[in-house]
Length: 237
Image (tube, rainbow, N blue to C red; front, side, top):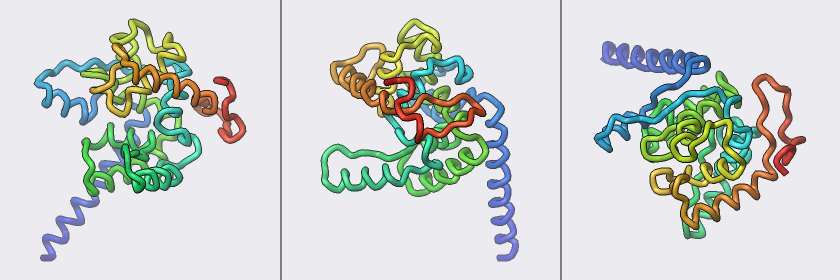
């Protein structure tokens, strides 16, 4: 029994040490591959991955605003978990109808980079753990940069630059406000919704997101002293 406890302690210590080191490393190293990319390759029986890592500053400035308008309006205000959004989603889901989620961009980034898809409580616990780590060690600028470089945006397409090339024939820096809103509209299910061949529903979502972008602050540059509560709608009205 003592030997078993010692092994458990070593395993737990190794997990915490390795996970913290991995998070610190990814603060500086581009994330070229994620668990989801590998899972999709196995599911599709196809090893083709369209993914180009680029710095956040080389993306259209509309892109961070669009995903905040669509996925996480309070991204610059919360510390990884948005309890206001959780409360609203819970009340909505109790009333019935289409289920609403409340995962923040930070939580989605933690899941994409370090974990696997799923809804189990165990995976959710790991997600919260890694979300806390990236909020502490990365900060908002790096979280957004990794998110926009690693998120699934179509069949075999990951990240804004690959999406811009294959779906719009552009560079990420040349995406328009409408392009960015359309990409953001697909993110709840990018394998079902297409930014290359948008349906009428996608165009409706694009218009809604563009309208919401007027009330989202412009995204700060790295190291910029910034208070989002005084800049709502600053440059996208």
